[in-house]
Image (cartoon, rainbow, N blue to C red; front, top):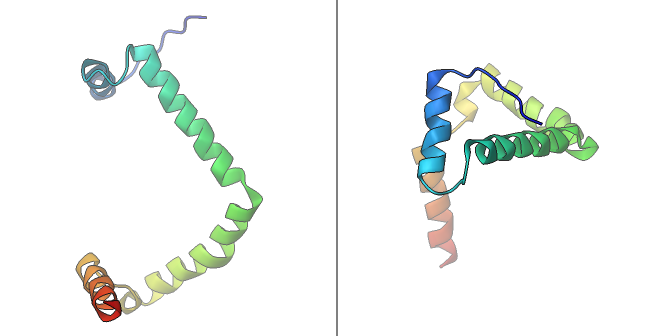
Length: 90
């Protein structure tokens, strides 16, 4: 079944770039892979355990961080902390 859709020029360019790179054989392959990834994502976020984890663990941490930004680390601080812990184990 053929379907025709209009997409913005930047999206069309991104699709064409993936085909030109050789990663995909056709525009249709790019679209199929994108739809497959969306389907997988939908499945992941419909998983009851993931939903429970997001609501009970992730959301409270995010809310606490928004309420008190001093609780969070910059990327550089996190890297330094990990490096220090690795060095301590060595």
